[in-house]
Length: 389
Picture 1 (cartoon, rainbow, N blue to C red):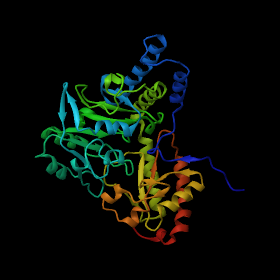
Picture 2: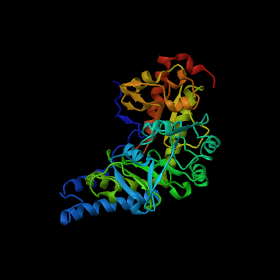
Picture 3: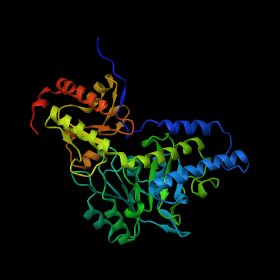
Picture 4: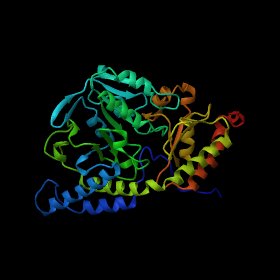
């Protein structure tokens, strides 16, 4: 009789499973009525939940609680930060241009509220790191603008040189935003060291609920102009009734993620186990961004002649969920703009797969991937197993 395996989830960069303590806190919040803007007892209780969560999210970023504005997720957080108008000590500051890397998430790559003509894309090196010299050339003689760079890439896990970027922003008088959606809960968020004026977060990347995120600023005196206007919620920075239950869960997830930051060694060990196993199957396996600092939970790899789309289907038929290294649109795998920017040839980019682990990943799940992978390669491109690196 064929063995049956429990479903395996290895797509944490798309969204992590909801943590048990988060679910329990959210259910408790859902059972209480009350609008957080109401002054009666039920409203004050809802407000208390939000402010407790605000403290926890702030601690995740090493910030003060007044620095946190809750929004609907990472995309809204990025759209809020990518504004050509900021407030600095109560006075408006108009930013001329948006400087962003060639490997940004689409929510940043589309430019937010900056006109297309005011966006400048900075190239990256073959490992996906922003070219600092190219950034400096672009910003050194420019009027004050906004530099926006992700902390860690969602496809490859490559970590950007944020302190160096922040130093350039400060040296030449630019504002600096960091998309920390993939980084939060996986590496230390240090806004002071980065000299970042704002970071974006999304709760569901580290075990919180979908549909809530935050913009966190280094100084509450320097903030982007609101994207959502209306009532006075979130200190007038984001109109609309707060999602109390989701924000409560966000806070619990942030607190747990911060506690676990010092315990990520097992993820690094599993990544080594995975990548060593992949190369034992196919010595010619390419691991993208391998020479750069990467998130310990992420591996993006490819074997030439093993198409990602077909490999994903094969894994899915065996109850293993992972993803392509490229973005998926309408159910089809397209060529990754991240890998293209890194100079990867199209044929190889179409073979890229991403495994991203998290708080609930086990060694047995990695072993199951390594058990299935030789069969998939043998079926799709048997010559690949004998090709030298």
